[in-house]
Length: 433
Image (cartoon, rainbow, N blue to C red; front, side, top):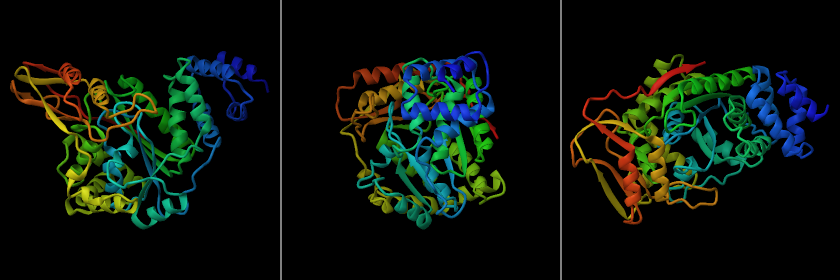
């Protein structure tokens, strides 16, 4: 079959067969199909979309373009969680030890960040000594022994997706629901998950700004997962303001510790209990979400969750004493208060702008080669709907330089205060199963 015929077929609204999609992905991965032809196909998909069968077949073709992790040596149902990303998204740091504490095996591959703050691995490396450089045999052994291990994403997973994503990024085809969904799901499936819980975010700080788009993406990913034999569920959550209070690597680790102790921010706690209850049900540990939520709350109250976090850190070389002594985490040289210029109520906090302010301090990467300052970031003291008095602290800047005027101005511009009381957006907007 000629590639140009497949491009024409999709351009004209036709449906590609499994064998045609397999040949397309294999040829592009191996280099026999050039970038210009795959660019044309991506644009055809952008405008014509894909059927449910096409999306599932594209996903599995990308899965089989590289290594597929075999987690059959781990007892129990392996449930993975994926977030579409946001600002202050500390959920993995809380969820992994929390669900492991009630018997859900967590064998997670995570990545480094590009953008506002570091990824899960960057955040964990705020803990002195912690590392993810372990082989698959050690990885499986740690999960069987402790119920939890996290390693870095293998470069051998889904090479077709990596190559196609780089192409989409420069051809105006990033915002294609079928291509986004197959990209995300291919990595989750190749990572060995039996079941998948998706946290699909919407709002200012999310990739999907509009609820309709977020719902469409969530439904598409859930359909792919279920169609290829992975039980999948999606939760829709708000990212119109930062999640929790902390934005920055070591600062988010501190917040995760607080949350595992039961004294974390209300929104972060609520989201982790919701996602965690789905993971617990999918793993067969609880029959209902209500039963699962009670198990998770008990794990926090009894101290099992925080002890599991300590065990996890120690097993991967980390200094677990930071849990009881958070001051041992990287700490910025300067803490600078950003005070309210007027009284009223917090009407909005622009999540994306706050994330960029944190990146300006060094908390994130502008490029893959950028170095991250693990100590810096921003801690919010107010959330949407909270009352504010003039002169009261809205946020604290954690910086390693006193020259933060530009960052301060960005934070002030990101937080809108008005006279009338405000009702914040609900954190959770529904589920798709």
